[in-house]
Length: 295
Image (cartoon, rainbow, N blue to C red; front, side):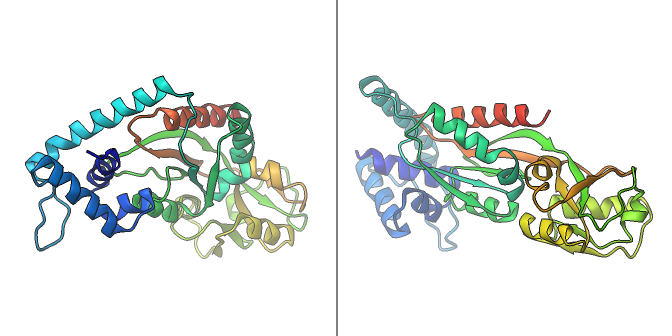
């Protein structure tokens, strides 16, 4: 029995999708399906219930074998750890992060990870939360840091400290000690892309204050938002840590306001990987680092 075939079946069963398991293993779906058929031949029983509607279903034997497969993979991982020097992840860490995390604590965290494990290889994708969740569902990322959790089988999630959000502007906006929300709403308002957490939170804040007709612009790039704010073209909503790291160079500063923006929630979601605790340890490291970064 080939353990690669066992692993392919296990990931297909946990993701409920053969194509996603194939993408994770970097093989074509036809090859993944062939591996599962070979495994069925070895076991002399069907594991998948192949109906004309093509929905993913396990047979009763397949459902039982998922547990057996996990035990086999865990056992094999333990054997490997005993007979060879631990090497952490056996492939590059496929990580996805939203831009807010990138421009706050992601790079210092990666630097700390590399100090602990100089051999760590990284594949980093910076995308919107919606894009990252879709990539995680497709099995092309091992871990994501996003503003929503990934809620699918085979993925764990932990909540990280939320990022405080602030209004920010360039030198062309009044430097009054404190602003009312109504006063800020007279300017162009710049926030994240439509339907993002900051976009929805800003609209909720305006509605609660009874402010109508505010001009809110959805900007998909933090760098672009800061350039616009620096040029005096609007008041931006930004994570406080991002503003601290990037704001001084273009001259963007925080504005004190009587109304508080909703903090940006951050979640770490990662694949459950049989046979190794390396990814769990990396998430623990990220949680501890983010907690230290957001007092």
